[in-house]
Image (cartoon, rainbow, N blue to C red; front, side, top):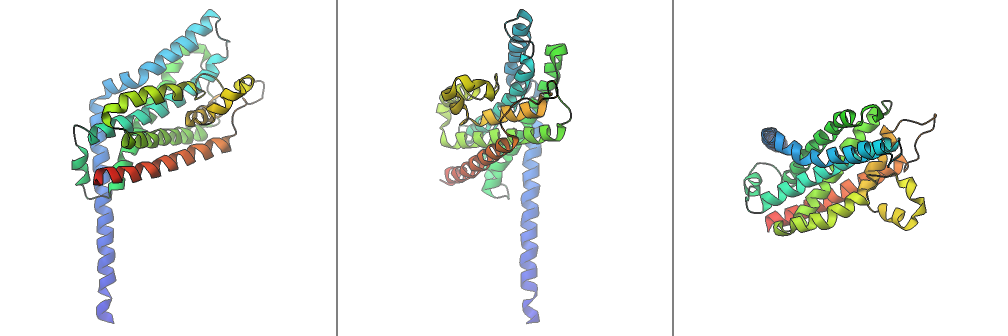
Length: 281
């Protein structure tokens, strides 16, 4: 009986060694991709921040200054722009990057040779895209402070909620990008972006609060099928200061977290399954 005891110990040692090797490879790939992102920092910032900058300037500054928008409109606009930047930057980061690796560069083949499960190759793309989304979303705050001036107001008593929501929004966008990239041929990706991203942006309550759509009930219902709606409403809950002691009416925080969390898990599960099927075949 004693002769049999070392067997499970050796098996456990191999298992720990495999986990350590996979973790080391995972962190090495993340570090390598972060280095590439740092080298391309200028082009990355220009690509991701051009739209938020012009949205803030035109809708938050120009319209408010000319009287075409109410003075408090920028308070409602900024959270939507932050959510939009987080979500879309992460989504495009995964979909474009992974479609390129699966397409003409075939870089994905080198990554599959690393000593880690195939699923973690996809997870690494999500982590990287989420970090890019968080960076772009964080930069929106000083941009807004510079553009909006005295109209810039963000509550600070919900900072933990704000950070948690930003992470969840970026993860959800990245997971959706993974799903899009594995179901779409690279040649059709620009067409999919045109068909998906524009409706996603303008039905996602980026520029208006969900409660303001009561007069257009059918459109209000449509927006509930867009995860960006819950991202924008969650950010308004965490960012807009109370007016005369009364908080802004938004979708319930519990519903926001439930829908975003469920969207992330569903996109992650289907995305990884389809990614594994695609790279194995």
